[in-house]
Length: 453
Ligand code: NAD
Image (cartoon, rainbow, N blue to C red; front, side):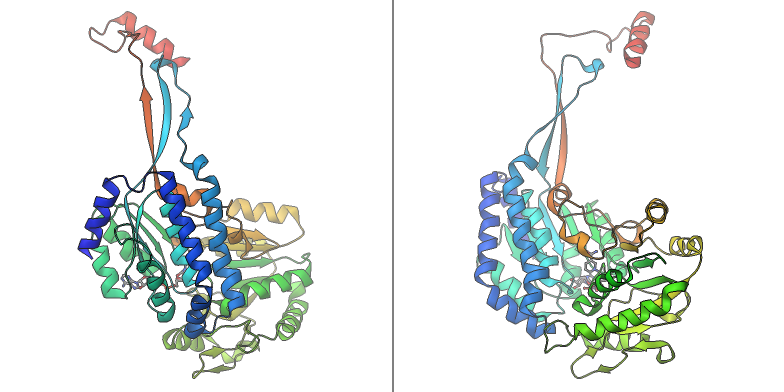
C-alpha cells in the first residue's frame, strides 16, 4: 500500500497527469474497457444481488459513459485559466485563476450502486489531473473483484490502482497521507474518515446518507405522484441513498393515495424473475430491515424470505414520528406513511432532524413549493419528481450538514478534485510608493480614497 502511494506521488510530481491529452486518453480508455467488459460487469453484479443488466445499464454504466463523454468534451474549458478582475490598488497588474490537480486521491465506495459510486468519482479525479487509489465496497464481492481486475490489469498502478478490502484495509489506507479523500457511505463511517483525514489536513468530500422526506400535498396530481414515488422508492429495492425514506401525506387524500400505491405496486410486478427487483445486499441488512416491519402497521407487503434475502415492497400506515422506523435511514423496501394536516408542523419536524440528503415535494401549489424550498435545507431534491435529479450532471450532487460535505457530477466533480490557484501578476514598468515607508498622512489619505473607489 505504502509503495503504491509513494509511486503515485512520484508519478504525479513528475507531471505525468498534467497534460489534458493524458487525462482524455485515460478516460477514453476507461470507457472502452467498461464497454468491452459489460458482460462481465453484468454477471458480477447479478451474482452479488441479482441486479439485472437492464438496471446495471440504466442506473450504473450509462451514467459513467455520460460522465466520461462530458469530461472529455469539456475538459479544455474546465481546465482553462480563468481571468479575474483586478482592483485599482493593484494597478497595473492582471489577475487569473489556475485550476490545478490536488495530487494523490483516495476514493472509498459504497455498495448500493457499486460501479457508479466507484467510477464516477474516479472519472472526476482523473479529469482533474490526479492519480487515484480506489477502494470499492467489499460487500458485493464479485463486483469489487470485477472493478479491481478491470483497472489493475489495464492501468499503471502509479496512476490508477484498485485496492480491495473491508474495514482493516480501509483503516490502513486512511493511515496514509493523501491529497484528497472522497468517501461515499454511512454517516458513522463518514465521521471516521473525516477524523483520519484531519490528521493530515487532507480535504474531504463526504457523500453520506440520512432520512430523505417526501411531502405530498392535497392538490397534487395523485396518479403521477404515486407512479414516480413508487418507482423511486423500490428502485434497487429501496437501497438508494436518495430514495424517498418516508412520506408525509395530507390527511384528506390518504386513503386514495394508499389505494393508488397498492395498484401501482401490483401492476409493477416487482420480482427477481421480472428483473425489476434486487436482493437485500446481505444478511445483516436483511435482518435489520425485517425487524423494522411493524406487523400492526402493514398496509401492503411485509412478506420476506431469508434464503433469497427478499423483502416484498412494503408500506406501513399510521406511522408516528417516534416509531422505530423513523429513527435511522431505512435503506430498504419499506415505506412509512405519516398523515398531516398542517404543513408548518411537518416543516418544523423535518428541521428538527439532521439535514437530509434529499427532499421531494409533490404539489401543484406554487406557494407550498416555494415555502418548502425556502425553509428546509437538504442536499438535492425534486418537485413532482424523485431521484432523477441525480441524472442531470449540470446539478451538483451532494449533501449538507449530516448528509455530507461537498458535491460532484459534471463540472462540480472537476472542481471537487481541483485546487484553484489565484495569481496576481504585476509588470515592472510602474512602481507606486504608497505601501512603502515612510507612512505619511498624505499617503494614508490617498490610500483611503483609493479603497473607497
Ligand atoms: P458504509 O459506511 O458501511 O461503507 C462505505 C465504505 O466504508 C465501504 O467501502 C467500507 O468498506 C468502508 N468502511 C466501512 N466501515 C468502515 C470503518 N469502520 N472504517 C473504515 N472504513 C469502513 O456504507 P455502505 O453500507 O456501503 O452504504 C450505505 C450508506 O451509504 C447509506 O447511509 C447511504 O445513504 C450512503 N450512501 C450515500 C451516497 C451518496 O451519494 N450520498 C450513495 C450511496 C450510499
